[in-house]
Image 1 (cartoon, one colour):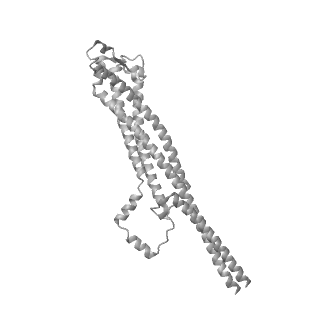
Image 2: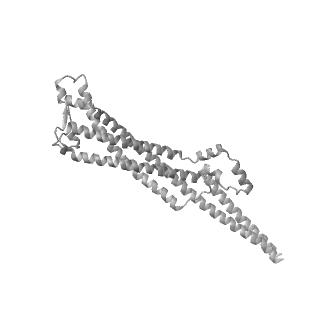
Image 3: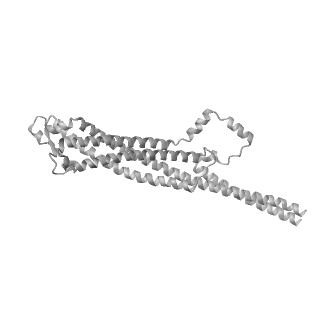
Length: 328
């Protein structure tokens, strides 16, 4: 009788412990489902038998496969990538052509001596090479960020098998967050720098509009309205002629080089602003994905511990059921 009573007491104790473990696990899983509603359909999937697997493989059609593929598309990363590519393309393409037009205007009208603007020509040529590097780098970086968005979306939604994450993967996601933050700050400076030529060309254009106005057109004071490029610091003070006045300045504003360079600088500045917005968008996406990966890894570790505890309880129950047979 005594061994039987001890066995019954042990079974009651083990059952109470199992209920506590299960209740605690259910509370944690319920909290996770409340935080991430999209994960409710992806927990505790039963292992299908061979017959079930055959039926599952034959049941989905083309529509279901398309819906599953569309569910794994990171639309936010896709929009940010398109915006980033568009902004970089506008900045690099328009900026390159506008810089070449600026050099032509300076050489033809404001600095006839080549030695006066030799340094400026070298700086502009260097900036054009930098533009080539920026375009190549951001083309590759945008593709990498889009691929990272596909990976994170598929992993969190568990579209392709069992979800597994590693410390290396989370470290790479954190590195992308830091790098995107640095690039965003750098592009803020590029955006501010690209507004400088727009300001210069706007001042020249507004001066030409004053010359063309009926109040000043045809009067003697027209020739006293001048624009001095030397005051902007792009050419030295000893450059000749350095400034243009009256009808000569109006002729510069009517040239195709001035018109094209002015509008291209505006578009390049807008492209730099679009790139800043795209990088901010990328930064929000990467931060969110990193947080999802971190929480999902914690949930995965918790499920592994729970499965190990349940296996230990099952082993204890099996051993406790074998003990009465040893007394008989």
